[in-house]
Length: 234
Ligand SMILES: C[S@@+](CC[C@H](N)C(=O)[O-])C[C@H]1O[C@@H](n2cnc3c(N)ncnc32)[C@H](O)[C@@H]1O
Image (tube, rainbow, N blue to C red; front, top):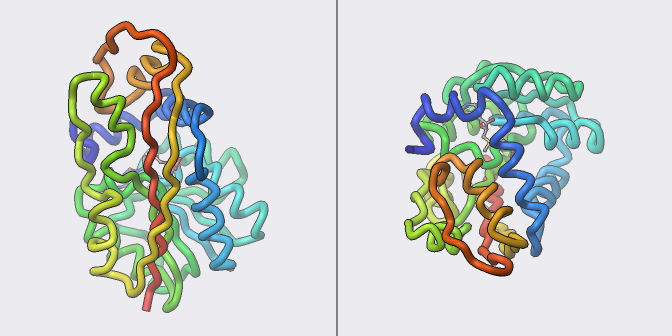
């Protein structure tokens, strides 16, 4: 099951059910909150016009609109995600980050949170995100490093699938289209209280669904390793 297979991605995000369940597991997290680190990076840009691609359920887009008063446009390939984002009062459109339906230099800030690893042609997506940004604008791109949830994969007796855009290769990929790239880590731990909570996460996972954890007592502690990249357009 490849995370950058368009058929897999389309089927996965046709509904929010499994995705919402994965996000809910982060109630067990400690350490820096990647969503706050992401929001702070957007605040710094003080965008008059803000574009978010792969907006999912639209929480971040709505927050930027409400708290920063920015003119916000959100885009997602999933009709359901666009519907949910519109329900929050955000101008959301169905579209593909690899072919953005916008003019050159329309936005002060763009964000792509946990979505670039789903895109078959990352260079094309990054080139589009750079094109629609004004000079000195910024892209805030979020992904996970390779050690993210490593202990969970180990508990299943497998290895984590390497993402096409991850904490280790993102700087090089972003550097092909942007000037300076900053890296902000939001590492910490997820402590599943017991086997059933950990199994619920696995059941909602794209790559691990169908696998069973062996019985164990007590909590399961796994590393979380999100990285927020801030890429500045020259
Ligand atoms: C893991 S979710 C992240 C959602 C949201 N950014 C968040 O952080 O909660 C990935 C999202 O990217 C969208 N997506 C995947 N490939 C896309 C593409 N090529 N163009 C636009 N959206 C895409 C999916 O439909 C899904 O809503």
